[in-house]
Amino acid sequence: MLTVVLTILKWIGITILMLLGILIFILCLILFVPIRYKADGFYKDSYQIRARVTWLFHFISFSLEYEKEQPFRMKLRILGISIFDNLKKKDKKSKKTNRNTSPEIVAASKEEQNSSEAVKEITKAEKTTIQGQDTVELKDISISETTVDEDMGVNREVDEFTFIQKVKLAFSKAIGIFRNIKYTIRRICDTIKELKDNITYYIELLKKDSTKAAFVACKKQLLRIFKNLRPQKFQVNLYVGMDDPATMGDILGVWGMLYPIHQGYIDLCPNFEQAVLEGDFYCKGRITVYIYIWTILIVLFDKDIRRLRKCLVRKGK
Image (cartoon, rainbow, N blue to C red; front, side):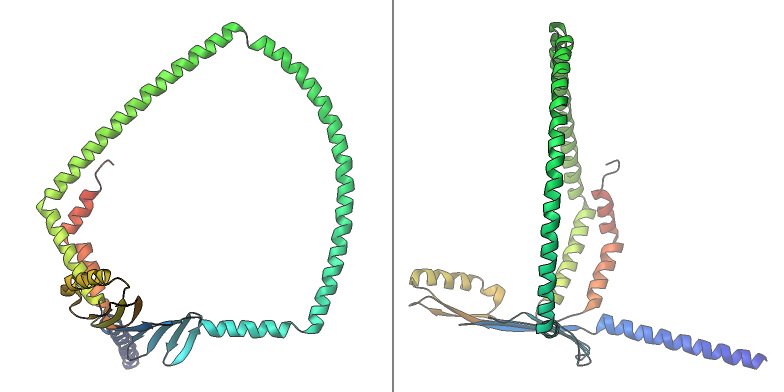
């Protein structure tokens, strides 16, 4: 009996270890296998842009394509099997609508519309007769009520609004205006004082060494994310021309000033005789997930950043 229990426990432990191993393997794939992206396009008489994102040797692939005078297309494939295609759905819907629009169905719908219109006309005529009778009765009642209200209103105005009451109302209104002015001035002074205190507090906070260290840590993480996002290979070829050679010279001057940034990956072919704008581009890169998780952990648990987060929200505010 004991041997049976031990064998059962052994197989349960083996299955648990296998499941844990599979989960760890999947987690490592998600974290360390990069997501690769590629995009290209051109602009001449027409234009076209294509982009593709793949993961784990095209296990999952997502593509975008847009061309002049063509609909925007999106595709999602898993193991080469099409899971989502926005243009296929439109084709299926158009086929269904064409099937439903048979001549018999169209004739039946027209007969139903004619019958419904006739019923609507009859109901409208009945409603107009009833509304006419109701409006006549309401007019008689309203005329009688307005005459009574006018007589009562004249008597009340004579009794209530005497000269002394009008003076009291004017005096109370003047006191209320002065009180409101006093309260508004006090509020403005309080807000100015609060703004001054906040400005001095945050200036002192920026001067601290811990805040400077927090900003340095955030800067490092942002640079790391930028390095992960930027394409490893890219090339832009431009063919630019202007009618005025001076403007074309200015463009070339700006291109030369920005050479340390683009480092020749943006190639510019000038034309000094006519206005032209053509070009094409290509880029390729990869994104790794663990870098983003690592940056999130640093931002959450770094002591300087945590201190800065606490100090940014003042106590009692």
